[in-house]
Structure formats: C-alpha cells, structure tokens
Amino acid sequence: MLNSPFAALRHKNFRYYSFGMLVSTTGTWMQNVAQPWLAYDLTGSPFLLSLVGAMQFVPVTFFSLFAGVMIDRFPKKKLLLLTQALAFAVTLVLAILVWTDHVVFWHLLVLSFLLGLVTTLDMPARHAFAVEMVGPSDLMNAIALNSTVFNLARVIGPALAGILMGSIGLAACFFLNAISYAIVFVSLLFVRPISQAKPQGDRPGVIATIQDGLRYIGANRALLQTLVLIAIVGTFAPNFGVLVPVFAREILGLQESGFGFLMSALGVGSLAGALTIASLSRSGPSRSILAWGPVATGILIILTGATGWPAWTAVGLALAGFGFILFNTSGSSNLQMITRDEYRGRVMSVYALVLGGTSPLGNLYAGLFADQLGARAGFYACGLAILILVGLKALVMDRLAASAAASRARCLPVASADESGEPR
Image 1 (cartoon, helix red, strand yellow):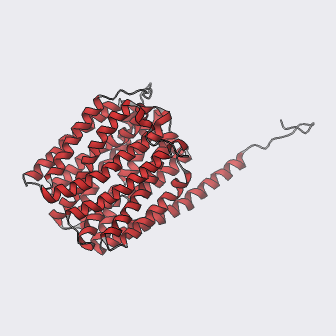
Image 2: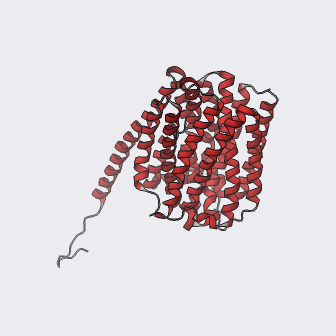
C-alpha cells in the first residue's frame, strides 16, 4: 500500500538530523569519487586502488561487535557527536595533504583506516538512533528516508565532484567533505531524543554482552536469514568504487567528469530505490524484495559489465543501484522492526559488520579480477558470486530449517486420552 514517503519529517528532530546528514553524505560521496580517482592516479593499479577501499572497512570487520556494546551502553547522540568531530579531523588532514601536493599512497591507506575506525561506530549508531528521533510508529519510514537522503547525496556528490575535480582540483572535494562533518555536528546539537533504550542494569562484561547479542540473533531465524543475505550482497555488490574508475578509463575512455556522471547515475537509481521503500514503509518490509532483491542485483551487475557505451553503462549502474538499495533498505528495516530495543545497538553493529565489514574481501576480490582480467571481468565475477551464494544459502539454510522443524515435531509429546476418549 502506498502512503506518504515523508511521514517521518513531521518530527522536528528528524528534520534537523536529515538536513545535517544530507550535507554530510554529499561531502562523503564527493570524497568517495575523488579518493579512488586519486588512488588510481598515484598507482595506476586496480588492485592497489581496491586496497585503499579495503583499508577503510578493515576496522568494521574487527571492531563492529565492540561498537555495538558501546551503542547499547551510552547515549547515541553523544556518540554521533564524537564520530563527526573525529571524521572532520581525519578528512581535514587528507585535504591539506592533497592541497599541498604532499599526498602519497601510504597516506591514503592510513587515513582510510582511521576513517574506517570512525565509521565502525558511526554507522550502527546512526541506524540505532532513528527510533529515538521518531518513535516506533514512523521507524521504517525514517529508515527509508535516511536511505533517501544518503542516495540523494549519491546523485549530487559525484556530479559536484566531477565538476570540481576537472576545474579546481581534487583537494576541493576533501575540504568540502571536512566542512560537511562540522555542519552535521551542529545539526545534532538541535536534536532532542524522544525515547531512549533503558540502560542495562548489571552491565555484564563486554565479551559476555557480545555473546548475548549473538545468541539473540542466532535464536531468531528471521534476523539470521536477513543478515546472511545482507552479508552476501554487501560483499559483492557495492564494489563500484573499485570497478567504475577502471571501467570508465579502460573500457569507455572517460575522464573525471565522465566518471562523475557514471557515479551520479548509480546514485539516481539508488535514490529511486530508497523513495520506493519510503512509499511502501507503512506496509512493512516486503518478503518478495528480501527474497528476490539479491538475485536481481546480481543479474544487473553482470549486465552492466557487458555494456560498452557510456549511456548504457549509466543505465546499468542506475538499475543495479536501484536493486541494491531496494534490498538493503528492506533488510535494514526488517532487522530494526523485529529487534528488541535493548539489543538494537548490537544487532545493528552485526548489520554494519556484514554490510561494511565484508567490504575488504569484496573490494580485493573485485580489484583482483579487474587487475588480472579487466574491468568487465570484475563486474561478471561480483554478479556471479551473488547468484551462486544466494542459491547455496537457499539450499543449505532452508534444508536446515526443515530439518530443525522435523526434529521439533518428533520431540513433541503425544497427547494421551482418558477413558472418555478426551485428551488429557
């Protein structure tokens, strides 16, 4: 059922937050375009380019579960203020290095790692904070609008980056991203949470808290199934920052502005996917999208790699972006709708782990194929990996679920009857 895609904006908190996040994510996408172009300029190697992307997500892989404990124990607004301040500092250092022409490849590796540490706490905290701004009734709409803001920035940011890179230079993208973190910091100061999760009473140890969260996920089949699908798609779908720069140069013969155009096309499709989910938010997460979204995304990535004309590549990227965001936003919404408040931070930290923490593997996988066999092979390899693993997931997990159900049925006591024939 269609309804207003902007219901969550009736909350003043969410309006302040959304404005800040639109500015911040626009800056982030400007950097996401400028940084891989810079890395490819410095190295000329698709594999080394993928290494920069991988370094940004290595901290997510190793520290996400610990971040979840922090999010469940401390006020989320204060954590977000901290992450914005740290991201501002890291990005400003990179901007100055590029502006003074002192940047070298190892700078990108180190600063990407540091920004990844910030993201490890920031990403799940932002997801878990949504319910505190709008309450449970508008939660799914708020999640979808967060995705809409992110993907609107995904349209604006790459287009601006392409223009600035070709006219002023790369440093402008990094300076503007640093300023954007300062703006979202200020916007958060005006947010007044309307509800907060109750603090834990006895505060068990960190490891015990992580184990408790993992047991909670393992006991909930819907959570586990959704997280497995997100892990598959999150590993092999969002490798566009590695593949598109190489594809733009080597296959399509494009320069900075053309690359920015392709990334904006990806953003247009992603924005359309987010708005679609926002319009459907009152109906709850769609089982069809959760089931078939990964399959459609894998096929569209393969088709994009088969294109040879910029306009068709842009269409392919737009459709792939649409499929990826349609599935990912549905998956994120499903997780939050069925998670108890006291576990929200830990569940969303696992979400961040399987979405972003698997990116080093995905980036290196895509970069290796692009380096050895060309950019087309990178697209084909990523799309096929999604299709194969989704098929294996359906085969293995559905069989395990059927086996568990049969085992439970065998263990149920058989009702006995008394002399009257009625069950006792």
